[in-house]
Length: 184
Image (cartoon, rainbow, N blue to C red):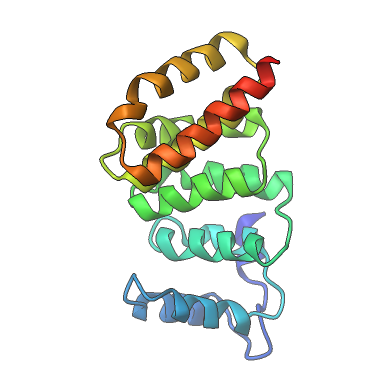
């Protein structure tokens, strides 16, 4: 299914897979304005269409999918499952961050989050504060209906809170508040 979607004409300028790959290969890896412009050129954005470009362009593809969601579009459960399955080979930390952000933005079901459990666990241990913060949020979504796991998460947050940077502390406090609200 993914390979047939990859051959779909993506926009008015007939942005086929080869043209898209060419544009992504010229991207410097940092300037999201370039990706935003590329996104706006695509007439009908289908997240599944881009999955064949993972892992080579994982940072760009995950950013484009996250941007699509931030524009108010939904990501179907099957697209989410396909994304999470295809992303198992993504080792780029920014691609992992985008996956975690996507999971939180769409309020992903715990069963789907189990597909990226390794990404979540790696994020929880990451040296990168922003990645760590989003990993905690995704982990909360993953375990929110499992009392024993939720309790472990609450204890972990409580133990590391004093050691965290301010940006991570703020997110951890919000998660702690959500946990308390679930218990009441």
